[in-house]
Structure formats: C-alpha cells, structure tokens
Image 1 (spheres, helix red, strand yellow):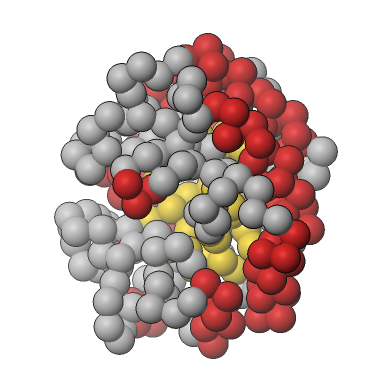
Image 2 (image 1 turned 90 degrees about the horizontal axis):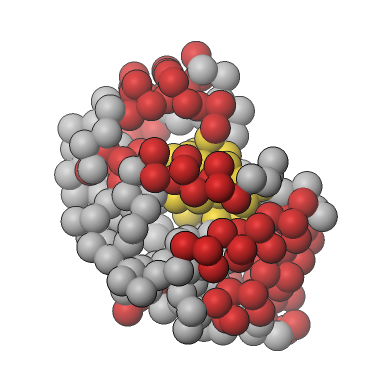
Length: 257
C-alpha cells in the first residue's frame, strides 16, 4: 500500500524534533518530498529565519512540494485568513513572502485556507485568492483551496468538494485548483472513490489520513489500497501529502505493506 509520490507533512509528523531537523529526518525515513503549514508566527519572519529553513530543506536533499500561506494561529483554532476582515492584511503581507520562499525551493503548490466564520467575507476571500493566484503564477505555482470537516472545524464554511469547486470557479484563475484532503472529505460523508473518478482533473494536491482518528493509512476504515489505485488510474501526477497524526515508532511501516 504505497502512495504515489508521497510527501511527508513536517507540521504534523516528526514534531518531536525541532523544525530545522525535520527535513533531514524525513530524508532518513526514505522521503524525497515534504510539505509544510506556514511554520512561522508572523507573515514575514525576516531573512534569517527564512534562510535557515531553506538551507535545512536543501541540505536534507528533499523537495518542498506544498506550502501553506499564513493561516493565522492554527493552534488556537484559526483556519485561514482569506475571508477575515481582521486577518486580510496579514494574509496579504504574507503573499509575496510565501511565494518567494516557494519559488526558491521549487515548490509549485501553495495552500490558502479560507478562514472561519461567522463574519467571513466571501468577496474578500475571492479577492485575496485572486491576488495570491496572480503572485503564484509568477513562479509557475498553483494555489489550492481545501475543504475541512465541520466536526473538528465547526466555524469553517468550506466543508465539501462542491463548496470548494464553487469558490474556485468564482475566483476564475487558471492556477487555482482543489486540495483534495481525503480524510476531511470522508469524515463529511463524501464518497472519495467516486470523487477521484469524477474530479481528479481538478485536484491540485492530495492529502491523506485515515478515518476515524486521523491516523496513518490502515488505522481506520478508508480503503487506501483502492484509493491509491484509483488515483493512479485517473492519471493523478501530483504528490500525496501524508498529513496524519502518529506518536511512537512505526509511523511509516504501512508503506511496506
């Protein structure tokens, strides 16, 4: 049960290590690609911190294939700044910083989380997505829109593939696509196999965890052997982000089965 082009998410796995040690640990675990949520407390942390992260990725010999724009205080429950009148300026301050870092590391996927309601501003979200997409186009990158499950994110309005597709269509930029986080979608009751068959052409990135529990594939009830087969059959060429929770040894043993 080996996913195509797996990328280790360094924001949710290997978190017992300092951030700058995780790229090398990912390489040691057999991965040549990684992804990250925005790893800094501010939208523009300054040259030294950015340079240190870039150096750690380059020294490890891994490729950054996915990077989130600044999404606010994730630990406190924030889930993006696109639609937030209070957070929009912070998002806009991050656009060029995140795009520049992505470009320096050859990263072609940037994730822009919508933000929590109530009080979210759809028109503002669309405008911010267009700004992010236009900036990302300068490095040949795609901006992706993600649906989250409402059980863990009760204030997040984009909770289905259709809601994400509607937003993407409204933004109307050729380099805006869907981030198919199959864990979140399955938790919301979507038929992920049917989604892959019908809409994989709209996927800009894929992330996985098993449901229930958000553990590694095989720990829950999702049919990951079939999921990987369907993605391959559909011609999906992107990376698959491993965005699951695991403590202790054996986090990647499932890949050998």
